[in-house]
Image (cartoon, rainbow, N blue to C red; front, side, top):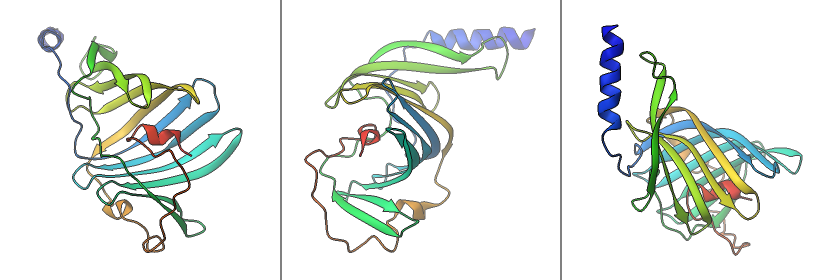
Length: 213
């Protein structure tokens, strides 16, 4: 009983504090799933995130227009380069990345929607305290982003795009740190490729690359 009372007091104290926009840990690895309102796109995969080196990698299985295929992206913002990698065929496409790096977390101009508990507050370890924020981005009329109160770990992101309607990305198995940093470097068969410029639309930030190809 004393434990429950202490937990209730702790939650009351935390909930009384006004959350602020935050940055996620600079090195993270985890998994994600994505679905779209029009049911035309679904993905499941792994991400690696390095804010120090301004690098992202997404290794996913994508289902689009009833076709399922692997999709592997490496984004190197400092080098302004994006690689589409095919490990099975040992092929690689190198494209320009002409946008600024945007770290994971909540933008400073975001508006707090509210704070809630995922799961239950009835006992220790049964719930997760999260904050949900909203705002607009150049490539999305509106987004809703939920992160943990402690650590600013991404939980879900929903945003609206013209091709797919509402898109929802859920994060899980997040770990602070990167077990295999080599995955954030181009494979041996990638460097030295000529740059391809075959698209007028470049990825804007981490979330907009989910719209590719």
